[in-house]
Image 1: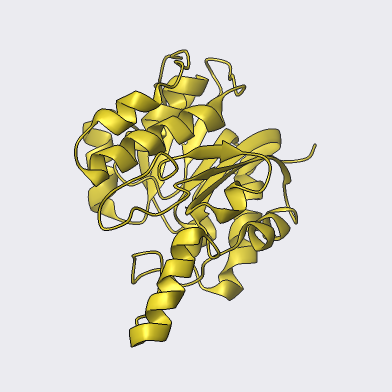
Image 2: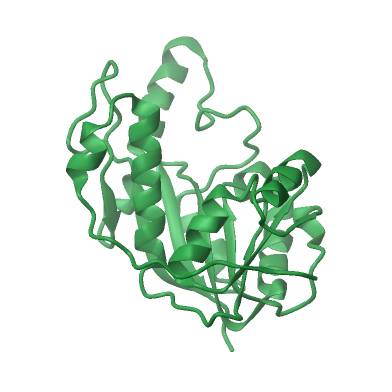
Length: 239
């Protein structure tokens, strides 16, 4: 199986004004998300022949960012053949398959990525999915996983709307099957991994489309990640 090499790019200092300066909320959200990934990758340095596997990678855009920040060879995976095709068209090797039975050999990845996928699985599938992530990650290898937070400040706004008109809050995606709090997520991951770092992103929701200096905040440690909309953990497989 061929792997494309992505050269390491040093992490740049974060300038919040660059996020605040861009216009629409989606652009600001994506700029902050990119910075969140840069922070999560800080300290993860891989050899040029190390393998970076992104599970449910989509078109590989974020996968490539992680590979460029950490070094190593990137391979993308997704259930959707069209997404695999888009990744391949950008010269990212891509394999089609189901996250519940990953089509990769055991201990083949030095770094495994799982952005925004675990919340799409049914609760009874989560443990076996985490076991699959551990299976494909080498002992001592790293995992970066992200998911919406069940108990964020934004979810409390969703609860208020539910009480008002019955609209169920599902982190703005009808395909989400199960949301996790920071506590439940770390408990789930600890069955196979050692959680080393926890980051949070998007703290205080915008009000009527107006963001505050706390809206696109990225936090690590302390109480703020547990209240943020986006949770990101950096973990390591024991061994």
